[in-house]
Length: 169
Image (cartoon, rainbow, N blue to C red; front, side, top):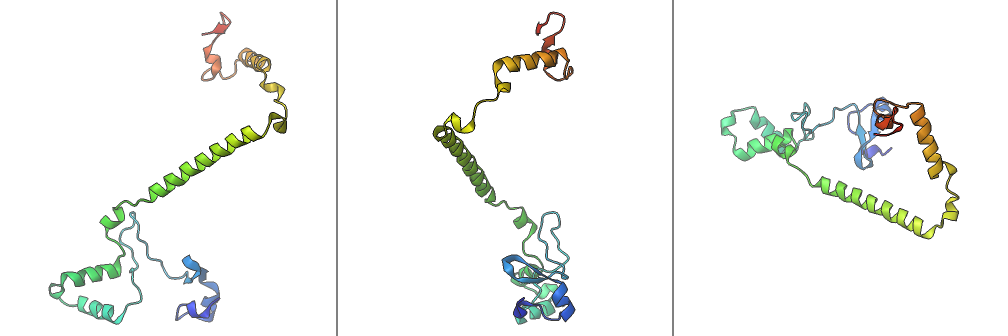
């Protein structure tokens, strides 16, 4: 592991057991509660910005005083220290659905082209002969056998067979 990326304040034991690979292949301390910004938990218990700059520390000290003396920009900056997005910003839609839909359409077209090319360029001899169970005679015998056995008489195709007249309803 890269010693430069290890968070400060961890003992040697913690360096070996509590570090895991995060996004971007950076080492992350898994013992620290992560910041969550989701619609079902809009107010995270953990602040968004943890490592404060000198300006942010001064603003946090100013926060402890009278809020009437804070400007609108300072209040917004304090909010952004605690939260990445507002609830309205989280609810705002994204255009990710366009990417997903485009990928699904592309896959469907690829499959259609693959099947078309396969049937054009591979003669039936490649696939072998059609099994005898797909012949019309076999299917007729199989259907008659299922009717004789009264297979699935409530919801199956036996519902459509009239057993007295011996014909389809």
